[in-house]
Image (cartoon, rainbow, N blue to C red):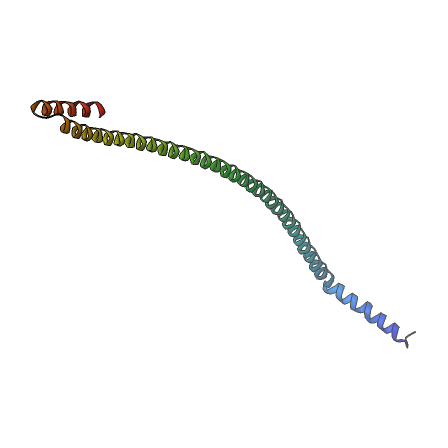
Length: 161
């Protein structure tokens, strides 16, 4: 028994444990383990708190994204409606512009026709006066012819114009 090495290892272990107990190593080890347990517990609490905050931030960002997407859809719908309204207004304005231009052109044409008719009448009156004066001057002679011619020309001009 005393010659076996296992016996002396056991005796040395018991003596070492006695010295550790006397020196208070077990209190130091337990205190160190308690501090480590408290530090680990604090780290776990911090990790849980950070996880909860991350979950809240994630939920907040998801809500913001959903809100932003709905606002984007509303903006797109509003832009489409505005574009359709502007197109309808442009079409109406174009139709009004064309109608006004057509009416203006028609009135200018009517005015030109009236002016041309007046010019034709004036030319016809001048030709009739010239023809009448030529005919009367060749057929009627003297002072009576001159008076008659002047009066006739004035009457024709007044009536034709």
